[in-house]
Length: 176
Image (cartoon, rainbow, N blue to C red; front, side, top):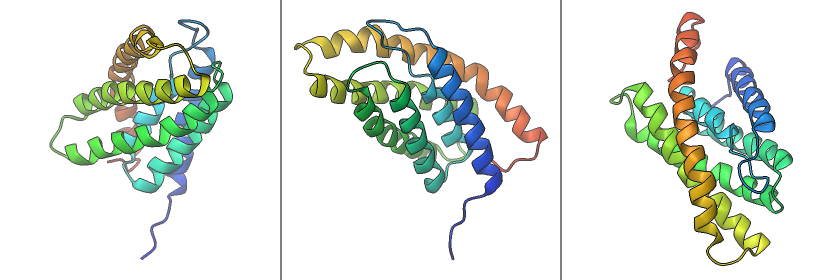
């Protein structure tokens, strides 16, 4: 039996990514032109709402491509294309492991926090190795960019997820 992608789900994921792209583009830079990755919030939201491997991979590749096109960091293009699919797989694993036994709001916040920390580590590791920044810059950038972004993304998800959850229940969209 072939597994098909539902057109309604694809449209919703497109809207989620579009909103994330707008947030990502207009997010102000924090340090040396680096901006917090607002697309991550929306990628995690899509993974939590539609935890199916095909959707997760498609979502991560599109999110990575948009992040690569809008990054301000030299070498960030390759880093985004590597980091988003790997992070999405980790987030997908957390969602699957949690199953139906976890409060969905807690799951959304947890996936966002852990996912943002992992995404930031992968992104910086790849970017630092491509650009060849000085030794020790990874920890400084992680502390000044990734940690605040993880905190912000987690708070944002705790606000966004309940709203999206109510909308999806009212519109009878089949989510996880």
